[in-house]
Length: 264
Length: 256
Image 1 (cartoon, rainbow over the protein chains, first blue to last red):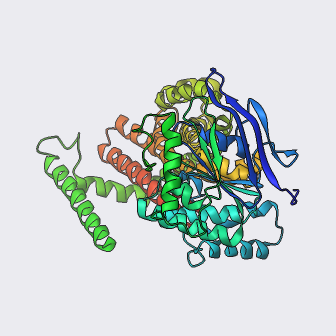
Image 2: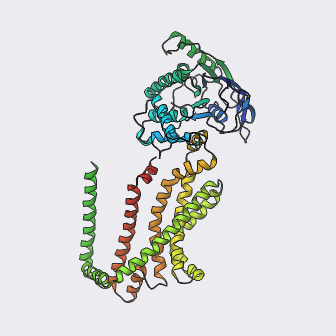
Image 3: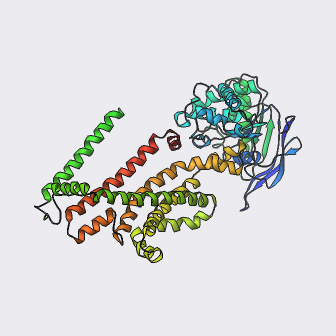
């Protein structure tokens, strides 16, 4: 893997399914190395399809995805996905430690090194005391932490997070957002974070991309919120940014839908 | 308090068995003639006599041998078939209904054709038992493969696993609980098949004992055979549960 990459570039990306429905049309997106890119869009805007394409689970109908000039093909450990589906994303027959180590088996020969690296990642997400538990013994928030650790361990170019907190209760969700923010500030891992929750995007992002509602979703705007490192939803600048996104989405959508992006 | 619950279950179970015995003891000789339904005491004496003569143990031995081997062969074949069919996407739509149909074919209806094909030795008996176990385990395994969550497969793919690695590091462990359940259900089916096979054209085994005692009007022996079968069948399942639940590396596959 080329470690000297500077940006992930998505250009002219289109996705059309066999029966003719266009999901995404002409998506251009640049994610700089070290950025925290939030892709924000209403339900049905093709966010998940975009994730599937970048992750390599689906092939685009047109356009390219490339780290600098080397295009990506198929799924791989340079683009690890953190899934929303809390119940199914972990391997239930493996302990927390074994889950975190899972991907290293192909890349790290030394067993002790695998252990150490997994433990480091688990420490980062605050689970180093729960290494021998099984996923069934963990809360939703803890399961998502294991997923994040399992991804971090691979040292991917990009961590793709597909609405990872949407299924959590509101309090846990907010806590996870701040923990992730903290984690990102310590690791400066490049993150593509997909959400329909405007305040979540504004708490986390260095860059925000707003998708229109589908079908045939396109990019409405890409901007840097320009907020201070410590984000405060009560801060006037935060509220101004919130309004701006709301207005943008409200443009193409019924006002009722465009309200606060509460999780289902 | 789990200990409490177990003790209560044991008490209820004992009471229910004792009640059954009591009803049986009262009914025999009053509601039904003793020829049709012998008294529990007569049955017990018959069991002791046949145990001492060795006939009972010999019958149990041969029946267990048949059911054990037939089941084991069926399990191995069923796991292999189920994995194969589950992996071949699209095939299960065609093959699934066939197996559901085969599951409904009573083993006893296969006995004549097995005799026609394989004669009256041990082979057709083993095959009938193996066959029905194979069907049950295949369906269960195939379902297991089909039910592996897509997200789990995708997670493995982005952690760098090849298709082959996904098969043995994700699909096999994900399917294990379904296989274990299929094997357990297979035990019950194997016993049904055993009796079907032994009712016809044999000279040994519990099934033979039951049929033969009817011809000789030895009802107590017949009841001994029936009870032996019940004990063997439920005993086998209990043993299976004990083994699979107590084996740590197996029990982790039951976690969801």
